[in-house]
Image (cartoon, rainbow, N blue to C red; front, side, top):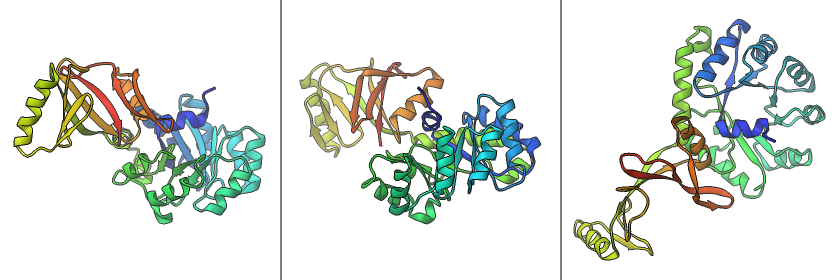
Length: 318
């Protein structure tokens, strides 16, 4: 059964929202949906949080609505009664966690050190909010904590924006990234819904981290591939020969026999192949499972089912 956490992982972003006026909650929710991020964490930092959650739950059914800054059991109960579908807390509160688990309400408690993680594991927690992310050591600390606790996942939040989102997105243990850069309070206050939608679209793209990796040229035989590689070698390109192809430098792959694609193939690197496939599905692309290669249970390489300009396209994880 697909869970709230599964959907959040597919989206990869959790907008962290502080809202002063509940009348602006629904237009904000619609702006998030239009921007391709149908999830909202409404923080209990204002008196309007509870009513905002209630309105979003009632009027934006396609939006996953959560409550953030839930620092005690009482707030968790109020959030649940208002329609919150998940809870996020800045720290590890046993009473709050036990209440949420008793209600079947998903919770992401905060933890940024081994002791808090161990305490959370004892309570059955598998996904933690790494907060405050940048102040707690950033991506390096997430990687360090992931080593001894290789079964858990993180939602880093705090100090993250478009400039550093990619350094978190490429970490396998990161299921999603939280932040307020696309839902800043001034944008909400001035009702700049189109701006919020545009920032959501920009954030979704930044999350993917698409970049050109290499181009593959289809040659008809190994002999022809050697001739082509020899030419590029004379231009200073190094040669690295493999079983089915020859790499000239880092960005040119010469196939020893015709491979996928009418003209050859394009390799695009990305932060997370599974999430990139979900992103590309909006443009009509899907992966060809027979071409998939996995590493530690996660997709490392896969071809797309359509060509671009006569070239097959395959994704490869950064």
